[in-house]
Amino acid sequence: MLGGDMHTDNAAIIKLFYQHPNVKLCLSGHIHLREKLVYNNVTYICNGAVSGAWWNGNRRETTPGYGLIDLYNDGSFDEQYVAYLNA
Image (cartoon, rainbow, N blue to C red; front, side, top):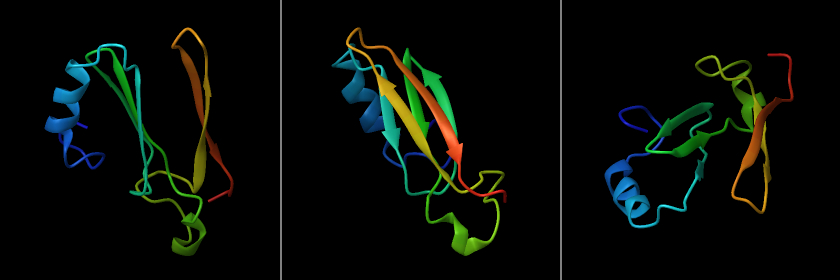
C-alpha cells in the first residue's frame, strides 16, 4: 500500500478515505500476492489468485487461492485466505 505492489494510486485512495472515515476495509486483487496492512484505521487486503495454478507454485510466498470475507452490520469483518493447492 505505502510502497509495495498493492496500489499504484495509493495517494488518491488515502485522500478519498480521509473524506469518508467510516471506510474500514479496502480490497484489491489481480497482482497474485497476499498482502494485508492497516493504515489510519483502514485495513487494506490484496488476495492471491485462483488462476495461480498456471505458474506452478507460489508467487512471492503466496499460494494460489482466494480471500473469504464476512462483513457485519456493525462495520466489522472477518477475513481469511484460502489456499486451494498444496503448492
